[in-house]
Amino acid sequence: MKTYYKRKNQPHFQGIGAAFCVTVTCHDAVPRAVLEALQEERRQALAEIEANPKIEDKLMARAELHIQFEEKLEALLHADSVQEHPFKKAEAAQIVMDHIKKYDGQYYHLCAACVMSNHIHFLVDFSMQVPDDWDGVTDIENYLNLDKVVGYIKGGSSYEVNKQTGRTGTLWSYGCYDRYIRSEKHFQHAIWYILNNPVKAKLVKSWEAYPYVYVREAGRA
Image (cartoon, rainbow, N blue to C red; front, side):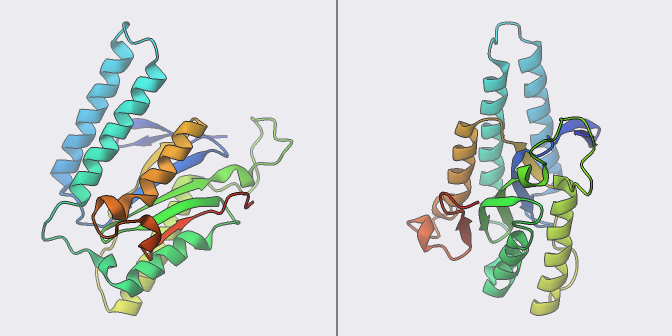
């Protein structure tokens, strides 16, 4: 089955049945030129890691670089500006959270999620779509990959937010930012990265006090 895709002419990996940490931003959350410059900076840094023979653990180096990129992106998303911030409206935020939860148990296990004023984060595990006896090669009938499901979330929530709040125009930016989860350590980091978003934004002192955050209960299937 296809696992490699092209995004803006760059190779992108989406493992079958893998877990992903996803960020989706609103249409005006980050100026396009600024975002493209940040992405180019990351691309060059990744290329330097691959070309440097002195770096023995390239997997760890790439992981650290991606974390640095996430931190820079997060700072841009929380910067004071004239952005729309559509999810400051409670009704809009709840609509988006409901659409993230909508496909839990159908296409993925939802592990954590957070709706901020101009972006969302969620951690999803697609292993539920993979049969126990899968050989790792044969196509899985009706398998939906991450891009397709994110499209469902964005399309449905955009329609409902505009309809219910009287808003018009484009809601989301193009595409999404996703990280393929490669280890348990990375998985736990992703959960706390998501849950602590409203704390880092100084909206609440504890993530439990924020109304638009979710984490799967331990032991829940």
